[in-house]
Image (cartoon, rainbow, N blue to C red; front, side):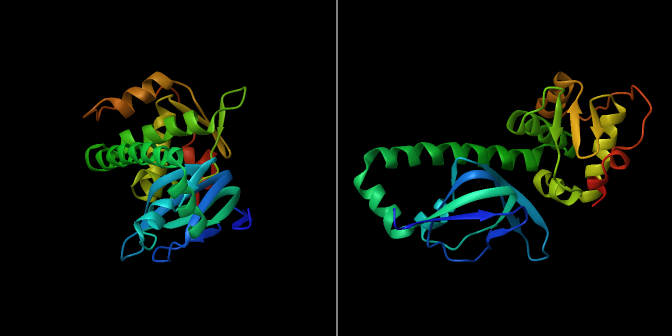
Length: 226
């Protein structure tokens, strides 16, 4: 397809900035990106993490609006850009494509409602537990149960919607409670049921007693101090 242009991006590259015009649609063929909304003070909130295979920027293009968030590459990724004219032609001639988009946007709307509820009603402890579960479910663990954690403290804070300092504090608490273990830039969930209970129980603010002594999570994972 002549209107398709493949590009490779490294972690930290910016795909587009808030306010840029949406001239087409990106297809995420490999890797992972995040959409970050920033307020006037520059504080960021991750509103979506998009994993391949998926589309990026389609909402803004179809709404004929500039991008409302910046798109940052989370890991080495491959994306191809589909020119807007070609994308519209496909939609106008393929009923199945329109139906697929309707299903996609219905799911995205549900995810947006869940995110809004989590940020407004959930405690930081609940959101941190939910972050751990998402890492387990979406990124997966190796045969020994270790889950990669390439994100820095600031990146985790933007995803969870809290201050950077709170990220280290709650990771350390979960470690002290025997819920997780750290090893450099990876972690392991020791009690999935307990973490899920924290994330899903409405209004739960209680803390489990520490099971074992140990260093703070930030000391075991230097990336959390960055």
